[in-house]
Image (cartoon, rainbow, N blue to C red; front, side):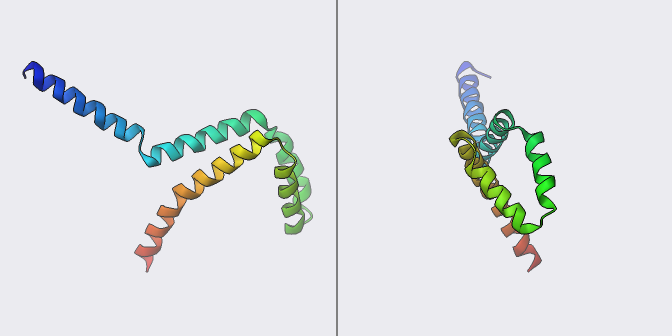
Length: 105
């Protein structure tokens, strides 16, 4: 292979790798992972789980109040991480659900 062919092939490989790394699905996954890591570092998951178990005994109404007050009572960074994580999850799950609903119909 000539030197120019090698250069062209390496540029094609770089563009292909960049398209994979910066694809929409990959960026959504990066946002989801970043959101999860942010929540793990900013929130005491064990305390939230313990409180949730205690509140869950009160039923769905108690759970709704707990979730609302837990989200509204946190810092802005945690709220943003929750928002980014929810948006990334919805945008990743929606196409899968629509594909399966079309195959089932």
